[in-house]
Amino acid sequence: MSEEVAANGRRVVVVAPMPPEKSAYALARYSRSPDSVVDSLAWVRGHSSSKFLDSFYFRYGHASIADLGHCIFCFEGVSELAAMEIEDEQLWDGQAKSSRYQDFSRGAAVVPDELAGTPLEADYSAAAGDLVTSYLALHERLREHLEERLPRPSSMPRGAYGRAIRARAYDVARYLLFCGISTNVGQVASIRTLEKQMRRMGVSAFGEVRSLAAEMHEACAAPPSCVWDEGAQPVEPLAPTLAKYADPDTAQTRAMERVRAWAIQNFDPGAYDQPRDVDLVRAGDPLDETAATWLYAVTSHPFRAVLDCVSGWSRRRRAEVLETALEGRRRRDELMRPFHSGYPYVFDIVCDIGAYRDLHRHRRCQQVRQRFGDRLGIERPRAVDEAAAGGIFDDAVRTAEAARERIREVSEPASQYLLPFASRCRSLFKMDFAEAEYIARVRSGVKGHISYRRVAWGIKERVAELDPELGSLIRATHPDVEDPLTR
Image (cartoon, rainbow, N blue to C red):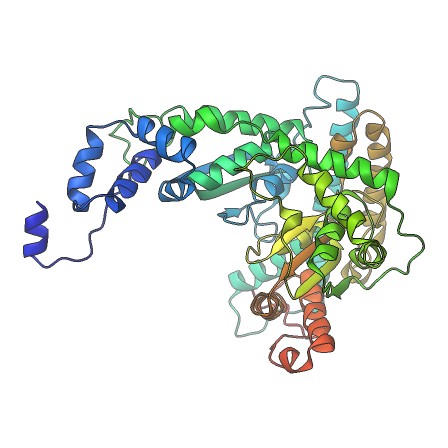
Protein backbone atom coordinates (compact mmCIF):
# COMPACT_ATOMS: atom_id res chain seq x y z
CA MET A 1 0.00 0.00 0.00
CA SER A 2 2.81 2.44 0.87
CA GLU A 3 4.46 1.75 -2.53
CA GLU A 4 1.12 2.52 -4.22
CA VAL A 5 0.91 5.84 -2.38
CA ALA A 6 4.41 6.77 -3.47
CA ALA A 7 3.76 5.63 -7.03
CA ASN A 8 0.64 7.75 -7.26
CA GLY A 9 2.60 10.75 -6.08
CA ARG A 10 0.30 11.50 -3.15
CA ARG A 11 2.08 13.51 -0.50
CA VAL A 12 -1.04 14.40 1.50
CA VAL A 13 -2.81 11.49 3.17
CA VAL A 14 -6.05 12.24 5.02
CA VAL A 15 -6.79 9.89 7.91
CA ALA A 16 -10.38 9.31 9.01
CA PRO A 17 -11.30 10.13 12.64
CA MET A 18 -10.01 7.56 15.11
CA PRO A 19 -10.37 6.90 18.84
CA PRO A 20 -8.18 9.54 20.55
CA GLU A 21 -5.72 7.13 22.16
CA LYS A 22 -5.36 5.16 18.92
CA SER A 23 -4.69 8.41 17.06
CA ALA A 24 -2.02 9.45 19.56
CA TYR A 25 -0.40 6.00 19.37
CA ALA A 26 -0.44 5.91 15.56
CA LEU A 27 1.03 9.36 15.04
CA ALA A 28 3.62 8.87 17.78
CA ARG A 29 4.74 5.62 16.18
CA TYR A 30 4.69 7.33 12.77
CA SER A 31 7.29 9.80 14.07
CA ARG A 32 9.43 6.98 15.47
CA SER A 33 9.56 4.62 12.49
CA PRO A 34 10.28 4.75 8.73
CA ASP A 35 6.86 3.23 7.94
CA SER A 36 4.18 5.08 6.00
CA VAL A 37 1.08 6.21 7.86
CA VAL A 38 -0.85 3.34 6.27
CA ASP A 39 1.62 0.83 7.66
CA SER A 40 1.65 2.58 11.02
CA LEU A 41 -2.14 2.32 11.24
CA ALA A 42 -1.97 -1.36 10.38
CA TRP A 43 0.56 -1.84 13.19
CA VAL A 44 -1.58 0.02 15.71
CA ARG A 45 -4.61 -2.13 14.95
CA GLY A 46 -2.74 -5.15 16.26
CA HIS A 47 -1.03 -3.62 19.28
CA SER A 48 -2.09 -2.09 22.59
CA SER A 49 -2.18 1.70 22.74
CA SER A 50 -2.64 1.43 26.50
CA LYS A 51 0.71 -0.27 26.97
CA PHE A 52 2.46 2.27 24.72
CA LEU A 53 0.96 5.27 26.51
CA ASP A 54 1.73 3.78 29.90
CA SER A 55 5.40 3.53 28.91
CA PHE A 56 6.05 6.65 26.87
CA TYR A 57 3.50 9.17 28.06
CA PHE A 58 3.01 8.52 31.74
CA ARG A 59 6.26 6.77 32.74
CA TYR A 60 8.80 8.67 30.64
CA GLY A 61 7.00 12.00 30.43
CA HIS A 62 6.63 12.35 26.66
CA ALA A 63 3.66 14.66 27.10
CA SER A 64 3.59 15.81 23.47
CA ILE A 65 2.18 12.39 22.54
CA ALA A 66 -1.07 13.34 24.25
CA ASP A 67 -1.47 16.30 21.90
CA LEU A 68 -1.96 13.87 18.99
CA GLY A 69 -5.36 12.55 20.06
CA HIS A 70 -8.44 14.76 20.33
CA CYS A 71 -11.84 14.27 21.96
CA ILE A 72 -15.18 16.03 21.54
CA PHE A 73 -16.90 16.56 24.88
CA CYS A 74 -20.24 18.28 25.41
CA PHE A 75 -21.55 19.45 28.77
CA GLU A 76 -25.32 19.89 28.93
CA GLY A 77 -27.34 21.57 31.64
CA VAL A 78 -24.31 22.79 33.60
CA SER A 79 -24.21 26.10 35.41
CA GLU A 80 -22.53 29.16 33.94
CA LEU A 81 -20.15 28.95 36.88
CA ALA A 82 -19.17 25.42 35.86
CA ALA A 83 -18.88 26.52 32.23
CA MET A 84 -16.28 29.10 33.20
CA GLU A 85 -14.28 26.45 35.04
CA ILE A 86 -14.56 24.06 32.08
CA GLU A 87 -13.27 26.71 29.68
CA ASP A 88 -10.39 27.84 31.89
CA GLU A 89 -7.68 26.20 29.77
CA GLN A 90 -5.29 28.15 27.58
CA LEU A 91 -5.29 25.47 24.85
CA TRP A 92 -9.08 25.19 24.67
CA ASP A 93 -11.34 25.20 21.64
CA GLY A 94 -15.09 25.28 22.07
CA GLN A 95 -18.35 27.18 22.12
CA ALA A 96 -20.89 27.89 24.83
CA LYS A 97 -24.54 28.84 24.60
CA SER A 98 -24.87 32.48 23.54
CA SER A 99 -26.62 34.93 25.86
CA ARG A 100 -27.28 37.20 22.86
CA TYR A 101 -29.10 34.76 20.61
CA GLN A 102 -30.85 32.40 23.05
CA ASP A 103 -33.53 32.82 25.67
CA PHE A 104 -31.87 31.53 28.83
CA SER A 105 -35.16 31.37 30.70
CA ARG A 106 -35.85 28.09 28.93
CA GLY A 107 -33.11 26.42 30.94
CA ALA A 108 -33.42 25.48 34.58
CA ALA A 109 -31.30 26.94 37.35
CA VAL A 110 -28.66 24.48 38.53
CA VAL A 111 -28.91 23.76 42.24
CA PRO A 112 -25.42 23.78 43.81
CA ASP A 113 -24.39 20.40 45.17
CA GLU A 114 -23.73 22.10 48.51
CA LEU A 115 -27.44 23.03 48.85
CA ALA A 116 -29.14 19.96 47.39
CA GLY A 117 -31.47 18.41 49.96
CA THR A 118 -30.92 21.19 52.53
CA PRO A 119 -33.51 23.70 53.81
CA LEU A 120 -31.74 26.44 51.80
CA GLU A 121 -32.41 24.69 48.49
CA ALA A 122 -35.92 26.21 48.47
CA ASP A 123 -34.51 29.68 49.17
CA TYR A 124 -32.04 29.30 46.33
CA SER A 125 -34.67 28.06 43.88
CA ALA A 126 -37.05 30.89 44.77
CA ALA A 127 -34.34 33.55 44.28
CA ALA A 128 -33.24 31.93 41.01
CA GLY A 129 -36.85 31.92 39.82
CA ASP A 130 -37.21 35.61 40.65
CA LEU A 131 -34.09 36.43 38.64
CA VAL A 132 -35.39 34.51 35.62
CA THR A 133 -38.77 36.26 35.84
CA SER A 134 -37.05 39.64 36.07
CA TYR A 135 -34.77 38.73 33.16
CA LEU A 136 -37.81 38.06 30.95
CA ALA A 137 -39.61 41.21 32.11
CA LEU A 138 -36.50 43.32 31.49
CA HIS A 139 -36.08 41.84 28.01
CA GLU A 140 -39.68 42.60 27.09
CA ARG A 141 -39.43 46.20 28.36
CA LEU A 142 -36.18 46.71 26.44
CA ARG A 143 -37.58 45.19 23.26
CA GLU A 144 -40.49 47.61 23.32
CA HIS A 145 -38.19 50.55 24.07
CA LEU A 146 -35.77 49.68 21.27
CA GLU A 147 -38.57 49.29 18.74
CA GLU A 148 -39.75 52.79 19.63
CA ARG A 149 -36.27 54.32 19.52
CA LEU A 150 -35.04 52.43 16.45
CA PRO A 151 -37.81 52.08 13.85
CA ARG A 152 -37.20 49.50 11.16
CA PRO A 153 -35.40 50.95 8.11
CA SER A 154 -37.40 50.36 4.93
CA SER A 155 -34.42 48.53 3.45
CA MET A 156 -34.20 46.05 6.35
CA PRO A 157 -36.26 42.83 6.21
CA ARG A 158 -38.70 42.41 9.09
CA GLY A 159 -37.10 39.14 10.18
CA ALA A 160 -33.61 40.61 10.33
CA TYR A 161 -34.92 43.65 12.19
CA GLY A 162 -36.73 41.53 14.77
CA ARG A 163 -33.63 39.41 15.38
CA ALA A 164 -31.42 42.49 15.79
CA ILE A 165 -33.82 44.10 18.29
CA ARG A 166 -34.14 40.90 20.32
CA ALA A 167 -30.35 40.48 20.38
CA ARG A 168 -29.82 44.03 21.63
CA ALA A 169 -32.50 43.54 24.28
CA TYR A 170 -30.81 40.33 25.44
CA ASP A 171 -27.51 42.23 25.65
CA VAL A 172 -29.02 44.23 28.50
CA ALA A 173 -31.30 41.56 29.97
CA ARG A 174 -28.28 39.30 30.43
CA TYR A 175 -27.15 41.49 33.34
CA LEU A 176 -29.84 39.64 35.33
CA LEU A 177 -28.67 36.22 34.27
CA PHE A 178 -26.74 34.59 37.08
CA CYS A 179 -23.93 32.15 37.61
CA GLY A 180 -26.32 29.29 38.41
CA ILE A 181 -28.38 29.48 35.20
CA SER A 182 -27.89 26.40 33.04
CA THR A 183 -25.98 26.41 29.78
CA ASN A 184 -24.37 24.02 27.29
CA VAL A 185 -20.70 23.84 26.32
CA GLY A 186 -19.08 21.92 23.47
CA GLN A 187 -15.31 21.48 23.24
CA VAL A 188 -12.62 19.83 21.16
CA ALA A 189 -9.54 19.13 23.26
CA SER A 190 -6.36 17.12 23.04
CA ILE A 191 -5.79 14.28 25.47
CA ARG A 192 -3.19 16.41 27.26
CA THR A 193 -5.60 19.34 27.68
CA LEU A 194 -8.39 17.00 28.75
CA GLU A 195 -6.13 15.43 31.36
CA LYS A 196 -5.16 18.85 32.77
CA GLN A 197 -8.82 19.89 32.70
CA MET A 198 -9.99 16.86 34.68
CA ARG A 199 -7.18 17.21 37.21
CA ARG A 200 -7.93 20.89 37.75
CA MET A 201 -11.70 20.44 37.91
CA GLY A 202 -11.30 17.57 40.35
CA VAL A 203 -10.15 20.00 43.06
CA SER A 204 -12.62 22.81 42.33
CA ALA A 205 -14.26 24.64 45.21
CA PHE A 206 -17.62 23.77 43.62
CA GLY A 207 -19.16 20.33 44.12
CA GLU A 208 -20.84 20.50 40.71
CA VAL A 209 -17.47 20.91 38.98
CA ARG A 210 -15.87 18.08 40.95
CA SER A 211 -18.74 15.79 39.99
CA LEU A 212 -18.34 16.79 36.34
CA ALA A 213 -14.67 15.77 36.54
CA ALA A 214 -15.76 12.36 37.85
CA GLU A 215 -18.26 12.01 34.98
CA MET A 216 -15.49 12.88 32.52
CA HIS A 217 -13.38 10.08 33.98
CA GLU A 218 -16.24 7.66 33.46
CA ALA A 219 -16.78 8.89 29.90
CA CYS A 220 -13.11 8.31 29.05
CA ALA A 221 -13.36 4.72 30.19
CA ALA A 222 -16.51 4.02 28.12
CA PRO A 223 -17.35 4.03 24.39
CA PRO A 224 -18.68 7.36 23.04
CA SER A 225 -22.37 7.82 23.81
CA CYS A 226 -23.11 9.89 20.69
CA VAL A 227 -21.92 8.63 17.29
CA TRP A 228 -21.99 10.09 13.78
CA ASP A 229 -22.78 6.82 12.01
CA GLU A 230 -25.82 5.51 13.83
CA GLY A 231 -25.47 2.14 12.15
CA ALA A 232 -22.01 1.55 13.58
CA GLN A 233 -21.87 0.98 17.31
CA PRO A 234 -18.49 1.86 18.86
CA VAL A 235 -16.93 -0.95 20.83
CA GLU A 236 -13.74 0.73 22.05
CA PRO A 237 -13.58 3.02 25.09
CA LEU A 238 -12.81 6.64 24.29
CA ALA A 239 -9.57 7.11 26.24
CA PRO A 240 -9.25 4.34 28.84
CA THR A 241 -5.59 4.92 29.69
CA LEU A 242 -6.20 8.59 30.36
CA ALA A 243 -9.05 7.73 32.70
CA LYS A 244 -6.65 5.81 34.94
CA TYR A 245 -4.21 8.65 35.50
CA ALA A 246 -6.00 12.01 35.55
CA ASP A 247 -6.23 12.26 39.34
CA PRO A 248 -7.33 15.53 41.00
CA ASP A 249 -4.46 18.03 41.13
CA THR A 250 -4.32 18.53 44.87
CA ALA A 251 -0.86 20.15 44.59
CA GLN A 252 -2.37 23.22 42.95
CA THR A 253 -5.05 23.59 45.62
CA ARG A 254 -2.52 23.18 48.42
CA ALA A 255 -0.26 25.81 46.84
CA MET A 256 -3.10 28.34 46.74
CA GLU A 257 -4.05 27.53 50.33
CA ARG A 258 -0.45 27.96 51.51
CA VAL A 259 0.00 31.32 49.78
CA ARG A 260 -3.39 32.51 51.05
CA ALA A 261 -2.39 31.60 54.61
CA TRP A 262 0.98 33.33 54.13
CA ALA A 263 -0.75 36.46 52.86
CA ILE A 264 -3.11 36.59 55.86
CA GLN A 265 -0.10 36.60 58.21
CA ASN A 266 2.42 38.63 56.23
CA PHE A 267 0.78 40.87 53.65
CA ASP A 268 -0.90 44.26 54.10
CA PRO A 269 -0.69 46.68 51.17
CA GLY A 270 -1.87 49.58 53.32
CA ALA A 271 -4.03 52.41 51.99
CA TYR A 272 -4.20 52.89 48.24
CA ASP A 273 -6.23 54.67 45.60
CA GLN A 274 -8.51 52.55 43.44
CA PRO A 275 -7.10 52.42 39.90
CA ARG A 276 -9.14 52.77 36.72
CA ASP A 277 -11.28 49.82 35.67
CA VAL A 278 -8.73 49.06 32.94
CA ASP A 279 -5.32 49.57 34.53
CA LEU A 280 -2.10 48.84 32.68
CA VAL A 281 0.86 47.98 34.89
CA ARG A 282 4.41 47.32 33.76
CA ALA A 283 6.19 45.36 36.46
CA GLY A 284 9.83 45.46 35.36
CA ASP A 285 11.40 42.94 37.74
CA PRO A 286 10.10 39.37 37.08
CA LEU A 287 10.50 38.48 40.75
CA ASP A 288 8.31 41.43 41.74
CA GLU A 289 5.71 40.51 39.13
CA THR A 290 5.56 36.82 40.02
CA ALA A 291 5.29 37.37 43.77
CA ALA A 292 2.68 40.09 43.21
CA THR A 293 0.65 37.83 40.90
CA TRP A 294 0.50 35.09 43.53
CA LEU A 295 -0.69 37.55 46.18
CA TYR A 296 -3.17 39.11 43.75
CA ALA A 297 -4.63 35.64 43.08
CA VAL A 298 -5.38 34.96 46.76
CA THR A 299 -6.51 38.45 47.86
CA SER A 300 -8.95 41.10 46.60
CA HIS A 301 -6.53 43.98 46.06
CA PRO A 302 -5.74 45.71 42.74
CA PHE A 303 -2.57 44.50 41.07
CA ARG A 304 -0.97 47.96 41.18
CA ALA A 305 -1.41 48.16 44.96
CA VAL A 306 0.01 44.66 45.45
CA LEU A 307 2.98 45.33 43.17
CA ASP A 308 3.78 48.68 44.80
CA CYS A 309 3.90 46.96 48.17
CA VAL A 310 5.90 43.92 47.05
CA SER A 311 8.49 45.94 45.13
CA GLY A 312 9.58 47.53 48.41
CA TRP A 313 10.40 44.20 50.02
CA SER A 314 13.78 42.52 50.18
CA ARG A 315 14.49 39.94 47.50
CA ARG A 316 14.50 37.28 50.20
CA ARG A 317 10.98 38.12 51.31
CA ARG A 318 9.69 38.20 47.72
CA ALA A 319 11.28 34.81 47.07
CA GLU A 320 9.55 33.48 50.19
CA VAL A 321 6.18 33.88 48.47
CA LEU A 322 7.34 31.69 45.59
CA GLU A 323 8.94 29.13 47.88
CA THR A 324 5.65 28.88 49.75
CA ALA A 325 3.84 28.15 46.49
CA LEU A 326 6.43 25.58 45.35
CA GLU A 327 6.68 23.63 48.58
CA GLY A 328 6.57 19.89 47.81
CA ARG A 329 6.64 20.38 44.04
CA ARG A 330 7.54 17.25 42.05
CA ARG A 331 9.99 17.29 39.14
CA ARG A 332 7.36 16.89 36.42
CA ASP A 333 4.83 19.32 37.88
CA GLU A 334 4.31 22.32 35.61
CA LEU A 335 4.63 25.77 37.11
CA MET A 336 1.19 27.13 37.91
CA ARG A 337 -0.37 30.09 36.16
CA PRO A 338 0.79 32.84 38.57
CA PHE A 339 4.40 31.98 37.67
CA HIS A 340 3.90 33.19 34.08
CA SER A 341 5.61 36.58 33.96
CA GLY A 342 7.57 38.86 31.68
CA TYR A 343 4.68 40.03 29.50
CA PRO A 344 5.03 43.71 28.51
CA TYR A 345 1.33 44.48 29.05
CA VAL A 346 -0.34 43.49 32.31
CA PHE A 347 -3.95 44.67 32.47
CA ASP A 348 -5.88 44.62 35.74
CA ILE A 349 -9.49 44.70 34.57
CA VAL A 350 -12.67 45.30 36.56
CA CYS A 351 -15.85 44.56 34.62
CA ASP A 352 -19.17 42.76 35.03
CA ILE A 353 -19.22 38.95 34.95
CA GLY A 354 -21.00 38.95 31.60
CA ALA A 355 -18.17 40.92 30.00
CA TYR A 356 -15.60 38.72 31.72
CA ARG A 357 -17.28 35.66 30.14
CA ASP A 358 -16.58 37.17 26.71
CA LEU A 359 -13.03 38.32 27.47
CA HIS A 360 -12.23 34.97 29.08
CA ARG A 361 -12.32 33.39 25.61
CA HIS A 362 -9.09 35.11 24.57
CA ARG A 363 -6.39 32.45 24.92
CA ARG A 364 -3.20 34.12 23.74
CA CYS A 365 -2.63 35.62 27.16
CA GLN A 366 -2.28 34.59 30.78
CA GLN A 367 -5.34 35.15 32.94
CA VAL A 368 -5.58 35.19 36.74
CA ARG A 369 -9.01 35.87 38.22
CA GLN A 370 -9.80 36.80 41.78
CA ARG A 371 -12.67 35.03 43.51
CA PHE A 372 -16.14 36.13 42.43
CA GLY A 373 -18.15 38.11 44.95
CA ASP A 374 -20.21 41.26 45.42
CA ARG A 375 -17.54 43.47 47.01
CA LEU A 376 -16.99 45.45 43.77
CA GLY A 377 -20.66 46.31 43.34
CA ILE A 378 -23.09 46.00 40.46
CA GLU A 379 -22.83 47.29 36.90
CA ARG A 380 -26.08 49.04 36.03
CA PRO A 381 -26.37 49.59 32.27
CA ARG A 382 -27.57 52.98 31.06
CA ALA A 383 -30.14 51.28 28.82
CA VAL A 384 -32.06 50.10 31.91
CA ASP A 385 -32.89 53.67 32.86
CA GLU A 386 -33.53 54.69 29.26
CA ALA A 387 -36.18 51.96 29.10
CA ALA A 388 -37.66 53.00 32.49
CA ALA A 389 -36.82 49.53 33.81
CA GLY A 390 -34.85 50.54 36.89
CA GLY A 391 -37.42 49.05 39.26
CA ILE A 392 -37.24 45.63 37.62
CA PHE A 393 -33.46 45.67 37.73
CA ASP A 394 -33.04 46.95 41.29
CA ASP A 395 -35.65 44.63 42.82
CA ALA A 396 -34.03 41.59 41.19
CA VAL A 397 -30.56 42.58 42.42
CA ARG A 398 -31.78 43.16 45.99
CA THR A 399 -33.67 39.85 46.14
CA ALA A 400 -30.62 37.92 44.92
CA GLU A 401 -28.36 39.73 47.40
CA ALA A 402 -30.59 38.83 50.35
CA ALA A 403 -30.65 35.17 49.33
CA ARG A 404 -26.87 35.13 48.88
CA GLU A 405 -26.39 36.44 52.39
CA ARG A 406 -28.45 33.58 53.84
CA ILE A 407 -26.69 30.97 51.71
CA ARG A 408 -23.19 32.35 52.42
CA GLU A 409 -23.60 31.44 56.09
CA VAL A 410 -23.73 27.80 55.03
CA SER A 411 -21.58 27.72 51.90
CA GLU A 412 -19.63 30.57 50.31
CA PRO A 413 -19.15 28.65 47.01
CA ALA A 414 -22.90 27.99 46.76
CA SER A 415 -23.69 31.68 47.27
CA GLN A 416 -21.78 32.50 44.08
CA TYR A 417 -24.44 30.72 42.02
CA LEU A 418 -26.80 33.63 42.69
CA LEU A 419 -24.38 36.33 41.55
CA PRO A 420 -26.00 38.21 38.64
CA PHE A 421 -23.89 38.78 35.56
CA ALA A 422 -24.11 42.47 36.53
CA SER A 423 -21.75 41.76 39.45
CA ARG A 424 -18.31 43.24 38.95
CA CYS A 425 -15.18 41.10 39.15
CA ARG A 426 -11.43 41.65 38.95
CA SER A 427 -9.03 39.73 36.71
CA LEU A 428 -5.50 40.03 35.42
CA PHE A 429 -4.70 39.66 31.70
CA LYS A 430 -1.01 39.42 30.70
CA MET A 431 -0.21 39.70 27.01
CA ASP A 432 2.09 40.97 24.28
CA PHE A 433 1.31 43.88 21.97
CA ALA A 434 -0.18 41.68 19.22
CA GLU A 435 -2.82 40.32 21.60
CA ALA A 436 -3.55 43.76 23.05
CA GLU A 437 -4.08 45.06 19.52
CA TYR A 438 -6.30 42.10 18.62
CA ILE A 439 -8.56 42.40 21.67
CA ALA A 440 -8.86 46.19 21.35
CA ARG A 441 -9.64 46.02 17.63
CA VAL A 442 -12.03 43.05 17.63
CA ARG A 443 -13.86 43.63 20.90
CA SER A 444 -14.43 47.37 20.36
CA GLY A 445 -16.51 46.88 17.19
CA VAL A 446 -20.11 48.12 16.99
CA LYS A 447 -21.44 44.56 16.89
CA GLY A 448 -20.12 43.91 20.38
CA HIS A 449 -21.58 44.25 23.86
CA ILE A 450 -21.08 47.74 25.29
CA SER A 451 -19.47 46.41 28.46
CA TYR A 452 -16.55 44.66 26.83
CA ARG A 453 -16.35 47.39 24.18
CA ARG A 454 -15.45 49.79 27.01
CA VAL A 455 -12.77 47.39 28.22
CA ALA A 456 -11.36 47.04 24.70
CA TRP A 457 -11.23 50.82 24.28
CA GLY A 458 -9.55 51.10 27.69
CA ILE A 459 -6.87 48.68 26.51
CA LYS A 460 -6.18 50.87 23.49
CA GLU A 461 -6.03 54.02 25.61
CA ARG A 462 -3.67 52.53 28.18
CA VAL A 463 -1.29 51.22 25.49
CA ALA A 464 -1.32 54.63 23.78
CA GLU A 465 -0.48 56.33 27.08
CA LEU A 466 2.45 54.03 27.77
CA ASP A 467 3.71 53.44 24.20
CA PRO A 468 2.25 56.13 21.91
CA GLU A 469 3.84 54.77 18.72
CA LEU A 470 2.39 51.31 19.25
CA GLY A 471 -0.92 52.67 20.51
CA SER A 472 -1.37 54.62 17.29
CA LEU A 473 -1.34 51.31 15.39
CA ILE A 474 -4.48 50.06 17.16
CA ARG A 475 -7.59 50.66 15.05
CA ALA A 476 -10.29 50.47 17.70
CA THR A 477 -13.81 51.90 17.72
CA HIS A 478 -14.83 54.31 20.46
CA PRO A 479 -17.78 52.93 22.51
CA ASP A 480 -19.80 56.09 21.78
CA VAL A 481 -19.96 54.98 18.13
CA GLU A 482 -23.10 52.85 17.84
CA ASP A 483 -24.98 50.93 15.18
CA PRO A 484 -27.57 48.99 17.19
CA LEU A 485 -29.16 47.24 14.20
CA THR A 486 -25.84 45.67 13.14
CA ARG A 487 -25.41 42.08 14.33
